Picture 1 (cartoon, rainbow, N blue to C red):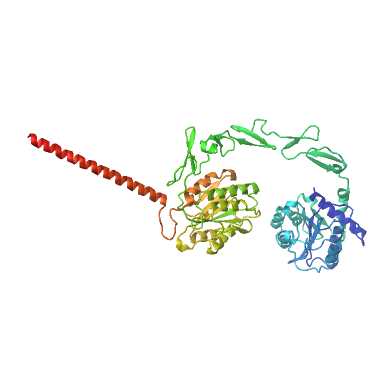
Picture 2: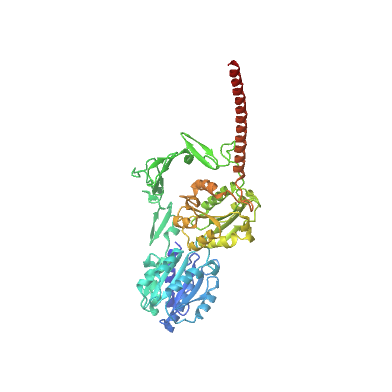
Length: 580
């Protein structure tokens, strides 16, 4: 609703130009805004026309409730280049803003409107320049005033700015191109695009909106009784419902739409209604097929919380747990004894982009700790480091930071979610150049300690991964790639070491990642890697020694029995000879 008030506010302020020389006092008060004027100062804008633009900005500002905790204002001008006049954090008094606007010297060159929108998005509306954080939901508004056709492309960059949460108003004067204005502006276009014949008439296009800005809001003034939302119209109001709900006959209350009720859902087992839509669900022991409607019977391992540390094996009507070769199942029937031969340097690189979401990021941390659980963490055994990335990369802790598995797990749970973009290539570069350096705890290559990198991501990288994925493997790092949700299989395979099928894993969502841990347990621990001399697993050695001991004992027993049988045969032969 705050954003819907912006257009009328701008237009109402423009009508105050008719009352020059002294602007009208603030008449209508809105909530706080972050508003940036993007002013065309190309050579086609003549000096007296630019003076009109100054008055245009000043009069709008005089009808805004400006201040540190109210509306913040910034101004940029552009021609062939972009110049910041003052940012959102510079001034919080109208007099200071007016003085700065009156001091603007036009650039008087070309008309690079796309460049100006790019600057507004990447610089003017950043928190460093004074914009409030997005989670505070302070509307971000850009008012673009131009008199000509842009000399660069505006469609794509304007769409990016709108997607970034910036509401764009496009004000064209005189020679402005309507198609360009419509390409830049937010929707609905009729509330965000304005074209006037000349600079002298710019103040007139706001008259029709005066009553909308300062008229009575019936939803505010009356006890409307709407359960969900109230929509004000001139002289009246009506009630609306949230998505997935319908308005009841009383015109005020809302009820959930049961999408399962008509029986047309096609679900084989169960239909679950949710806000006007539905999903199909299968009974215990069944899984939903790709058509999202039918179900297929699955093994009990997928239908129960089996608790197996390594792997669950289904049998008819039951299941049992098994352990990797060389490990034995403990008395609890679920956990395995640790062989403790796999000494490695392991760096986990986890995706902290905004698409992961906070609740899923907690599941990622639990996933990391499940991996740590089957490692023998110690200064001379396995070392673990953790890196998080989004639009930037952050080392959460290096390989030489923690000496025990419990310390590593505690540190993992304290990691804070970064949010923002997905720069996987940058994360791989950081891992190679920093995480596996001896300065951060990686042991020298001469010791033959395997270096293992595990990259966890839920989406497509926003930068190129090819170069650094290849360099990681060329530098001797064994790479594992784990993808969830919208992760791109081609990128995961490019990251993974050969054979790819043993180093690449995928799960449809964060809640079903347990099978990935099972696969990693089988593949991530090396058969060698203790010190400079390559040796087989002690568990395997012990089994071999036991086998040899048992074999020797059996052979000795057989030899003794053979000797006894030979003596008996000789005795029989002697007895036969005497009878003859």
